[in-house]
Image (cartoon, protein in one colour):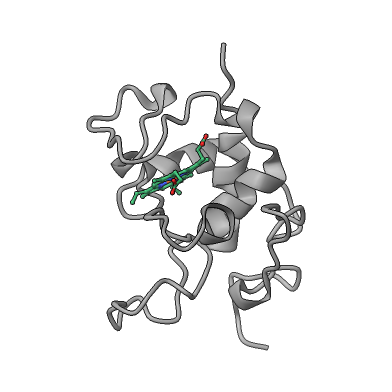
Length: 140
Ligand code: HEC
């Protein structure tokens, strides 16, 4: 068998089924790591979430975009299943017109360069890590 980072339990991007704006099942079958998720969130080459979202927990990072809602308290406003659906494919939650990218979908639009064709922006593990991190963002 070919070596692969994906385990048998990993749900492929084209098998993800978001229903009622929720995705209850973990993409990896395991819980994410909020510390790794915080890094992926801030990493300009991975989540790059700060390009569009203010997040007080990452105040030390320069430049927070304001295109999307402030994410402080996102863990109070949304359930884990909703947060997973938002990160996996925001269009299934906010509608086709949203400018937020889907981070675990192959349906990313027509202007995809060769390097990114057939790939998701985040891996299944990174999605689970980011979701675990988002659930820690509570209003204090
Ligand atoms: C290109 C800009 C953009 C990027 C990049 C982006 N988002 Fe968003 N996000 C939005 C917009 C805009 C909305 C509001 C929904 C809408 O109206 O389309 C949103 C909504 C959300 C919400 C719901 C917010 C709330 O409380 O109402 C969450 C959670 C979220 N994004 C998480 C993330 C995460 C995590 C990342 C990185 C993995 C990310 N976003 C990257 C633009 C972006």
